[in-house]
Image (cartoon, rainbow, N blue to C red; front, side, top):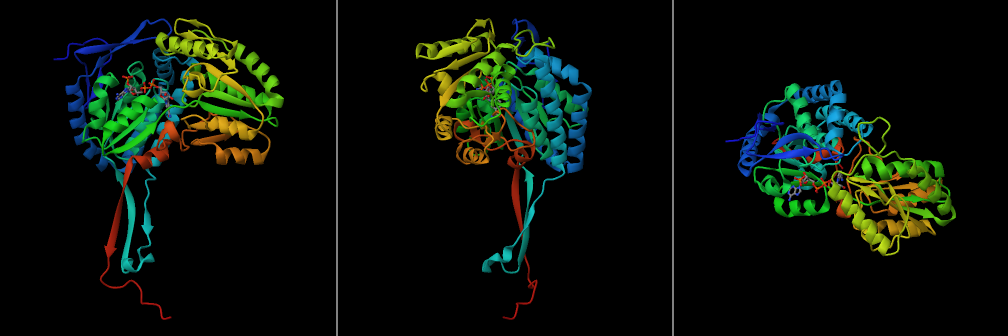
Length: 487
Ligand code: NAP
């Protein structure tokens, strides 16, 4: 029998339930207790999967009008309670109140886009007569729900990245179980509240709180689950891919995104966008600017302006309106950054600003002369650290940008259209932003990476495609449709 009776329950099988064990949700600012959630047991997860499998039949029978209406109402609910959502998001995560409001607004947009896409799940007619074997046949294909989807989400965008999975799943007529990050489950639970208020039939959406290392394996390997959509780090992603077996998979993983600044760039724009891209959410952002390659003729000027702008970032308490950057998600993460920087410095890197830690806070940090084989250059830093490299040409910048195992997005600042097209063609990434940093995303655009950055695409319409199956229909006619043409 579940013994927890305090804190916030999770949503399983259409019921808000507790568990025997609990997880304390702490504010990364000072480790104060924000709330308590259940740590789901394996038995609870199995029951949730069985319930959700039954619910997937109900979801598939909902008309697209019903799906659209529910998604619109859920978006309206979040909008009506925007400030409450933003405060909760900011409290459990490392985002400032302004960053949190932006994420809530994006969540509303993601749900609204999902409502629109629910009415546009289209197929095509097929020209069966293109082959002699297709004579007297006519047909088409259309899209059907996948069934039961499991979504596993990370800590850094705890609301909108959940919406990016729940919105398209419901638009496509699926049931979905969300397992949010253990450190930030409250925004996902609050999003479930919006769907309940919007009248989503019970069981179609479950939010199970618990440790990925304990309940992740059942969620991803259960045969009733027809798709796993994961956003998170490379290690967990690779583990899940091996375990999932024969089901649809979407993997939105990390990166160490490059930005190229050429001598014909508008430097003010390049500095402003790259500083924002490097330090948004304390650098805990899959699109965050991590490596900047600057052409030698503008390197000194870019570097000095970049350092000056970085030093203006106001680090502090998340709820204050004038704070620009909050803490790392945990002190342990801030200590990891400290170790990685120490390694870079020992290998010859130079630090220009930052490089200090206080609890879970790490100061915005700018490095140069970073050896290419140290962790801050090769791996995903996922913290407020940027490395700036001097290059002699666009060719060199592209080669260095591609010389890592990730490839999510890249940015290039240039006024030369030929340079822009060179970069577009040759950068090994899922998206290239011209005259912007890697850190630009529209929730409607196809979003995802190549190499270690993932498999598949999100962005509402594209996630919806991944969350549906094609079914082809072919009529064989007894009487020919047309007389044979006389030649
Ligand atoms: P993470 O440690 O990989 O965790 C992500 C999710 O996976 C969490 O819910 C986690 O649960 C769960 N998990 C961990 N091990 C698991 C297992 N063995 N089986 C099933 N689930 C498991 O990532 P994070 O630190 O939360 O987030 C940061 C990462 O996400 C970065 O690499 C970032 O680049 C990436 N990210 C990518 C995108 C994108 O769209 N491409 C967007 C945002 C973030 P627990 O919390 O219980 O461990």
